[in-house]
Amino acid sequence: MEKKHIDRRVKQMEAEGVTFHYNVNVGVTLPFATLTDEHDAVLMTGGAEAPRDPGLPDTNLQGVHYAMPYLTQQNKRVGGEDVSKITPILAGGKHVVVIGGGDTASDCVGTAFRQGALSVTQLDIRPMAPEIENKLTVWPYWPTKFRTSSSQAEGAEREFQAATLGLEGRNGRLTGVKCVRVDEKRKPIPGTEFVLQADLCFLAIGFAGSLIEGMIAQSGAAVDKRANVIANERDYRTSVEKVFVAGDMRRGQSLVVWAIREGRQAAHAIDKHLMGETILPV
Ligand SMILES: Cc1cc2nc3c(=O)[nH]c(=O)nc-3n(C[C@H](O)[C@H](O)[C@H](O)COP(=O)(O)OP(=O)(O)OC[C@H]3O[C@@H](n4cnc5c(N)ncnc54)[C@H](O)[C@@H]3O)c2cc1C
Image 1 (cartoon, rainbow, N blue to C red):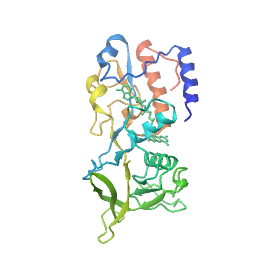
Image 2: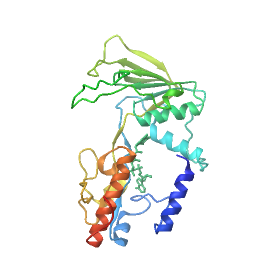
Image 3: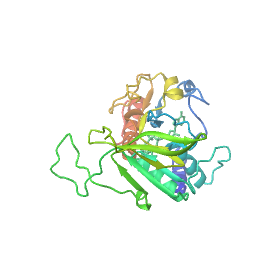
Image 4: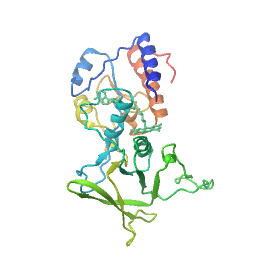
């Protein structure tokens, strides 16, 4: 999203009375207790960006990266921010393999093309979905349909039912990604191994939950086994007095529409908690 839209919204919110504090990492550069000491309610909305570990050997090879450091640094670069202190990850003139089939993987595909990658191949462990959805599919199954994101449409090679066996390298640098075809139960099919040439590989197989270290750990709020902070959708209260949580940090990595909904509902719940009643819509 172009930053002018965000700038406009920030101005509007400031005019409404919100004070923004930039470059603050709660739990690292600012103790969480400072927030609870100085405020009547604290809402944690830190997202869920702990990457899922693919459990592969050799992820320390040069050229292998998790998706988020790659995407955030390019966002900064495009936005004209100072990236001089960040080690650049650039796909120009390189063969790129993206492991994962979701939105984050799609963003890596598009970014790599825009940077001038020679080729981009995306590995998806799921079977290729049908061109037309089967409307007769019933719960618990979902009528999936083959979709092509705008990033993939820029020329990505898409490999389906492909699992990653490992990463190959020479002199500490990535040279290839070793793959195997899998059956419908995601079991490797013997004899179907293949290697994709790769100078860069992005790991985008989802998120394991919120980053516990820092803000959540210092807050003392209880988390579930998926590393989501525990609170219900009625009052959004955590296990800690006057500390609330909403968005991905509560429900796990999800969608923007859910984050907006949870933000509004949490505002309603906090207003009620502070004032005893609220006119904010749910
Ligand atoms: C790469 C990627 C692509 C996606 N694509 C889509 C898509 O196409 N469509 C869609 O609907 N959803 C998409 N999503 C999901 C969507 O972005 C999230 O569901 C949504 O943004 C969650 O909103 P949130 O406010 O809960 O958290 P976030 O939007 O993640 O915001 C959390 C904020 O808190 C800040 N923060 C975290 N910890 C601290 C701390 N300790 N101190 C201070 N600040 C902190 C972070 O810097 C961040 O700004 C995507 C997610 C990712 C990662």
